[in-house]
Image 1 (cartoon, rainbow, N blue to C red):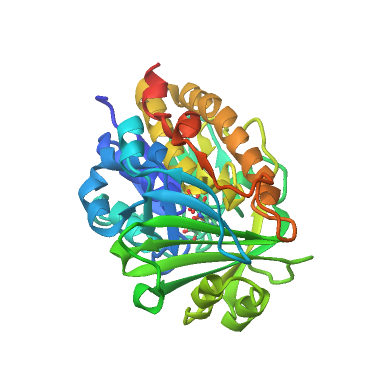
Image 2 (cartoon, rainbow, N blue to C red):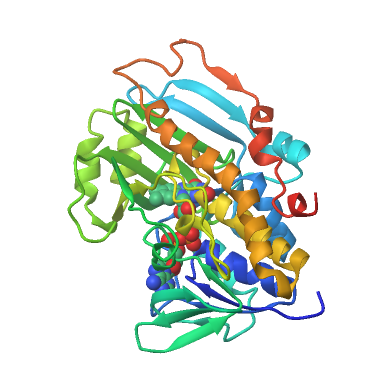
Length: 391
Ligand SMILES: Cc1cc2nc3c(=O)[nH]c(=O)nc-3n(C[C@H](O)[C@H](O)[C@H](O)COP(=O)(O)OP(=O)(O)OC[C@H]3O[C@@H](n4cnc5c(N)ncnc54)[C@H](O)[C@@H]3O)c2cc1C
């Protein structure tokens, strides 16, 4: 692209930083405006599937992920009360052979820092809370809490599930799922899991489940344990939790689960929200990415993966249509992203029940463990969010 686009990205989470890194790779000038005073990703680990890991590799993060992330050998579903294997999906080399990219688990802070290091110095403005945006002629404007404002031909709302940018485009509210999740990180030496085979383990039980996997090169295990809640009263959607609450909620579970959740020094608690899917999330010069566009429950572990896909499709559309055709680029971006994220958002909501077992029953009703072929996920993992734009 010969002419340079100026892009303002609002929000410096995984979505915003990936947009900025993909724009930087394409030689497009871009600045990120983040509300917090210090840039960080909280909330333990994140699973990065091949549909996103191949894109992160393209950004130049392969070596860095090789040092900090783990390549997952298998995903295992187990019963919560007796740790019996119910279903296993082999990943590892088979996944890399099929999809040319690994399935990673990584600490969020490592991924976030890796993305940040790809940006030119000074491109991220902290303490910049956006309070409103508006489409104009030939550009859009964003206003900030301190009274300052920025104009740009493209404004990207990457400001998460409670997006201010979304408010200017879509009239809806987040929906509480009835589930909270307690997340923590535990040093590996406090557990007796063999680190030789990195796995994602999910223990399932009535009304709740617990997911656990290694991060930080295997030195730590990240876990998330759901607990149902009728309502969520706190003003924020996340808060500091109490280890004793999660230990109490899992007191009847297998010792492996009890040891895991009890070994955490501290936990955070998140109220799990999503929104209903929508057909459009773009204006003439404004669009959304990540949770601002399609917040989903974490029950397919795809929210961040889809945010990374968004970033690549958006940047490829902006390049393809050129600086004079931003509106067409944003329509093209949305038309590619909406059907895919709509389906994944709905499936994630639908998985709420699938990840819970009725008292003592096994998922699917069979006493023998089922093997799921990762090929069944080809529609999800084999998707190339950049290549689809050229196609
Ligand atoms: C328990 C749990 C487990 C999950 N596990 C996985 C997983 O394994 N794999 C996966 O792919 N996904 C997972 N997800 C989903 C994933 O975490 C999210 O989809 C992803 O982090 C969304 O990134 P984002 O950048 O869009 O939003 P956020 O991470 O919410 O980032 C938004 C950023 O915008 C900033 N911001 C907000 N408002 C403003 C404003 N007005 N002005 C300026 N800045 C603002 C915020 O401070 C923040 O930095 C999980 C989610 C949960 C809750």
